[in-house]
Length: 385
Image (cartoon, rainbow, N blue to C red):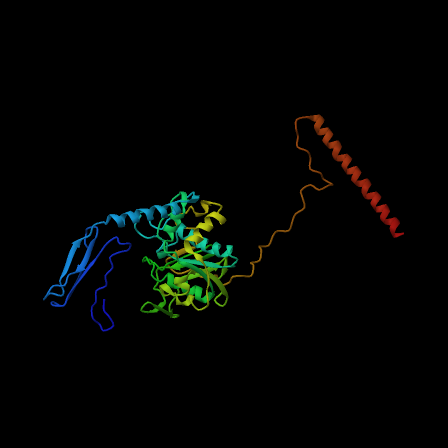
């Protein structure tokens, strides 16, 4: 890469946790810099000063010291005694990776593990008496699948292995929307700063248009208002995010204090500290889920909090409350073919007795009706008198 003076410089990284040892050779005589990573397990590099050749580097094979290895074994046993404690079980597999067990899923789209982690953060704050609205975790902070079966402390530490400090702060709705826009800016490319979100928050990302996010290097500058936003229809518990409202957000201090991932818009207000991120996962399983990660997290791609869209939104209804069209005129109701004075004859049954009985019943009903009418009429006349 080029430095501030425009000169090419080499940036090297050999991995983490002593998984590899790299070598960079700076030769002032030739003016060259070279870098390599040995294919073998590890090497110890030491400089041996020789008269007339100060740049001489001697490479020696590094073996395992017996005393150091014994200390390592004891420490590993002590750690495993603590992390091997079973705190619950999972009925489902939760995913940080795609099916190839290599490609990061949590850095490119919603996953059930991302849902689980953010829900844990949200409820961790709630258990502490904080009425939090939303929780975030960056995809780069979710590091391992969580398989169905018994869940140990070590399993949850593997999911959030960095012991990040959780905290909460107040943010405006506009800053939330800008943070979601920044999160969506790299899609469909994988990005460790892609945000997984807690329950209740849902939105759509349009991936076929350029991101309107403005940056200066790695610093968030703002949103280009001349462009469409990728994030749309952002709602919290079915209500649109209000840009002017204040919301309580739970995340780790890397974002809410240090502005990591360019999320400087989330660092405007003071924060209050909670516990560690993996402690939140443990408490959520034991306290809120009663020891069982259940079928609510069964879908590998999550609960539909983050959707993607290609193409514009459908045209809005230009007349959302149209005047009802008049009903077509109905024909005047016609009197029935047979009224009380002309009762409909009974259908023949082939039984003369039944037919005669039916006719007699009709005649009796007519007589009763006539008598009732006469009585009512007489009473009315008396009342008038």
